[in-house]
Image (cartoon, rainbow, N blue to C red; front, top):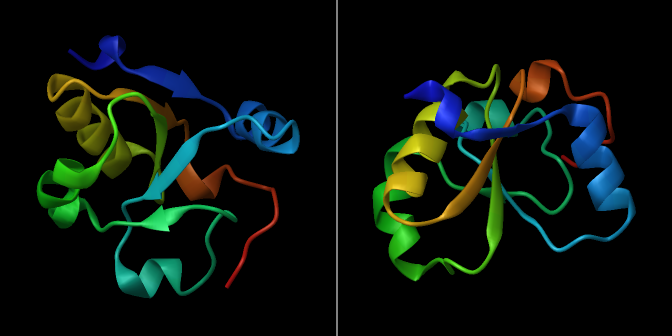
Length: 103
């Protein structure tokens, strides 16, 4: 069920990052999408690679999942939450992000 995933807005995420909170960002977009810029500190793990990638990830860490519009990251968040991870989905994805980008 969709409503079980915690969401975070672009503004909330910018505030958390600005305060230096420990949070891990995972960008699940494809290579050609991240080439246009990513949120600083985000790790690029394409959606299809998430199942393999989580084997080396820490369940004590809170993860924010990012994609273009918020749909693929929601799928990743649902999967990771079922596997026991603490996750949040970035509402509206990169379409709603107005913070800085690194290329």
